[in-house]
Image 1: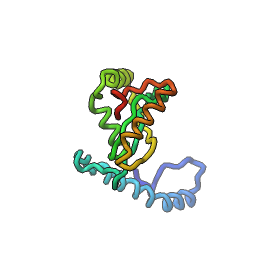
Image 2: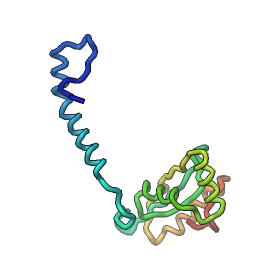
Image 3: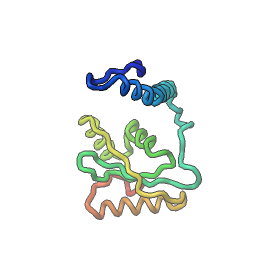
Image 4: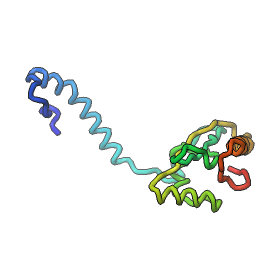
Length: 149
């Protein structure tokens, strides 16, 4: 689109058209350039993906989008969106977890991921177990195998 001559409603005066085009043109040019750069960006290989810096680990929950109920608790040093893609791409270890993801897939749904807390690496297993126990005490059917994340 030529942002120097965009379509305007008939009641807009030529002076206003010129002023709007002059103000908006650089913004739209910048957005077009950003879109071009994003399209040219190649996905990172798994070993190049960003991770949480330092000794921190994110404890997260995978939630069922049908009822917003937690179904799995895990831990990661990866960025949260990357971890979610990993869950969706790979079958889970437990039969129940795998069945849940397959059921969502058949409905064209995906689980959503929610960070629960960030902890030191040394505390990660204890905190995962805390959240599993917490969610189960509330009556949620968390699918972690033997309480592990």
